[in-house]
Image 1 (cartoon, one colour):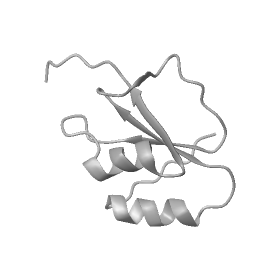
Image 2 (cartoon, rainbow, N blue to C red):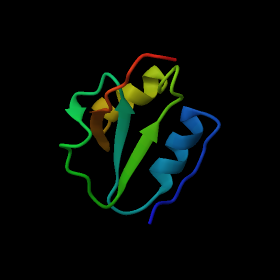
Image 3 (tube, rainbow, N blue to C red):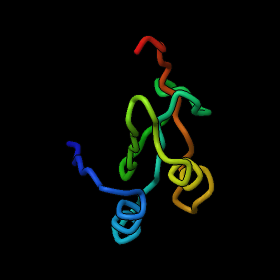
Amino acid sequence: YVVVKIHDSWEGFRDYFLQQEGEKRLLAFTKRGTKIHSDFSYRKGDYLLFGAETTGLPPEALLDCKTEPYGGGTIKIPMVETY
């Protein structure tokens, strides 16, 4: 199953995430990701981060997903720019 939570800010989510116990990994979904979503190996404890379709995730979220100890990288979802 999936638990969905919406946070008001990146800082609010990050505080929540760091308080969670167990295995965990941050994965940012973006059209500029480095790994293709269908080829990626997901696992229990993954936190899947999605931003607004028009603006994406904030830069600090993308940076944390690439560099933090719990960062799992960025995942690419191909987008058609028609909006």
